[in-house]
Image 1 (cartoon, rainbow, N blue to C red):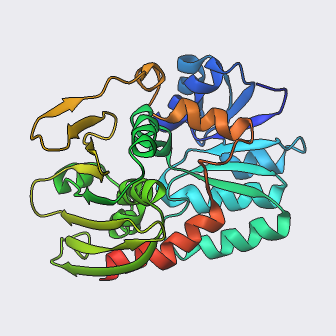
Image 2: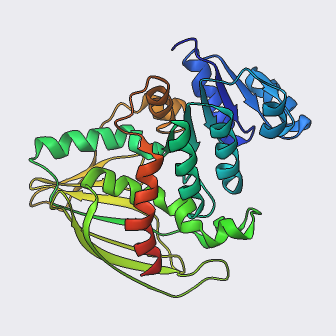
Amino acid sequence: MNDEKIWVVGTGAMAREYAKVLKALSADFTAIGRSQTNAERFSEETDCHTLSGGIEKVLSGNTDIPDRAIVAVSVDQLAPVTSALIQAGVQKILVEKPGCCLPSELESLQSLAEKAECRVYIAYNRRFYASVLEAEKIIENDGGLKSMHFEFTEWSRSVTAIERPREVFENWFYANSTHVVDLAFFIGGLPEKIASFTSGRLDWHTPAIFTGAGKTEKDVLFSYCANWNAPGRWGVELLTPLHRLYLKPMEQLQIQNLNSVKIDPVEIDDTLDRNFKPGLYRQTKAFLSDNISRLCPLGEQLCHVKTIYDKIVNG
């Protein structure tokens, strides 16, 4: 790529995925973790330079600030780590979605970024799936998208099987479900009108059932649903005058022709999405090359929280 200095903050599973991509892109980077044990294990597994002690310790003893940073820490640490990097002078940051644990943290991050003239992007990797790129081509060839439906049902037992801070569970819609919502409106345009309804609750999240509908700025009619107390899965369905496209699972693309009930798989070149975590190679390459057309800027994320996500989760 280039000779810029890059930090990957985090030494967990997501940081490993980024390390794999960065090595494939021949990008020189340093990983930063908290515990020495995890840092050593990360270094052994990825064969890359790794520092321990956490971002605060590294920053306090390091005046050689990187040009770019990728933040791949736990959800509850996303905002504090990003804030520290902004204040240290890092100018370009890619932070794992949703960029915060509490939506209210985004405003202070945006204020810091604006003052420091730092460009921060939220890593919604599904925007970069090969299946999504192919779906966009078909939509364009068909004359545009006319309507869409998406579902963001979460599997409660799977979510609670991993120990996380209470705040993460309470904000799970923002922390995880927005992957689906972001993609749907990235393809179909932002909502111009939206009516949202909710009901039910879980021990760890309120609400549990979501439904709604509206129209986007591209005149695309949409509907959505999710019931975290019932079976379901993530998915986006895209309807054109000629086809119904299924991103369900989202890594794959299926197609239904007009006047037919048959659903067929669409052949796509998903080599990158099979060799790396889906979407991550294209997303990381876009970030490193300043090709930001598919990235989600921090300011855009803040706007989405206020105008879309809050409405969906609050009904």
